[in-house]
Length: 394
Image 1 (cartoon, rainbow, N blue to C red):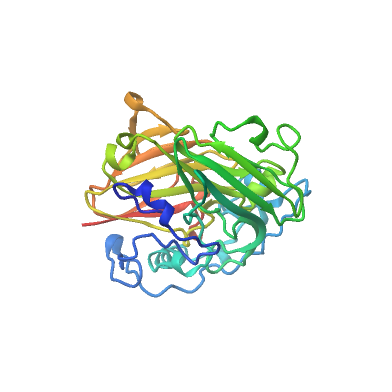
Image 2 (image 1 turned 90 degrees about the vertical axis):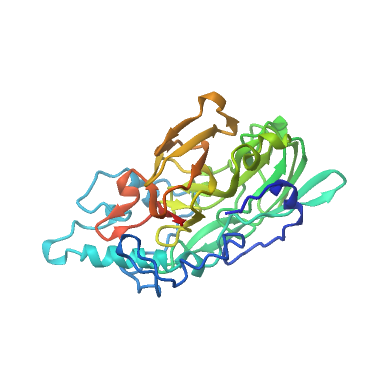
């Protein structure tokens, strides 16, 4: 996540670079509400992180070439009586083994309010400052196997990352900038990178054997293009992509408008920006590579205008629902909606789509924010997966 201030786009060149950050360095560090302070909304008290509520789950070791991924099969299997994310691998619970739903659900929420997202290392979406080669902004990227944590209590999974994280670093430029992105492939297989939503030269479009040769293990490939159009875009693998994107080869590519009057801080008074990348393949149902209760909350002051850039890198549609207040939907796939902008409290985001929404944080409290396909967000052990909260402080 990144905090937006007036003139924020011009400041990115001075940001530090971190390949393996422990947590988002710009996520409102002055806020202490989620690190042990008393918090009474909905009768809950944020305190010490609770012990694991459901035990650990098997490490995910999906490898390239597998023809029937278990996680994908689980997502498409017939419903069972247990609608948790690992229900397809579990027998229906018996009456004697019924979980204590209230206790487990409360424990998960306390872990979330206690700040579990800050205790799990490897948080992605960190801004990567480019180096300059004349008037060209240069981003140096690695593609490597990583060990990734989805929550504090689940076993780590064998994933893939750009510069060591899932999602990869946040790349940010201005419309019209010359961009050079150099990717070094440290995998044991080929890959290719697509800048989704950008008008790039055909030879730089990232699809092996269609527009470019694959980036083989141990090799580099350099993408050079002029950034356009502006808006919310993505970069991700486009080779063995079901596996590679599903295991973490994805990131946000933001192109700010060259006209300052068209930027969100000027146009809507936005002071905080949230990058929200969903995925639903082999790592389960995730927001920015994490499952609840390790998802990062959004914290804002009453009356603050915040921007969320929804990006769907998965294989399913996700209708994002905010409790307590609506969202003003202002752009789709990077293109401003103008007079077609609309207001909603539930917004469906299809695979590959990007939607920008502005929220007037007018109602104080801790408001649930989740996918409204309920098996993606809640089961017999309480909430999991695609859940976070908007905390509005009065």
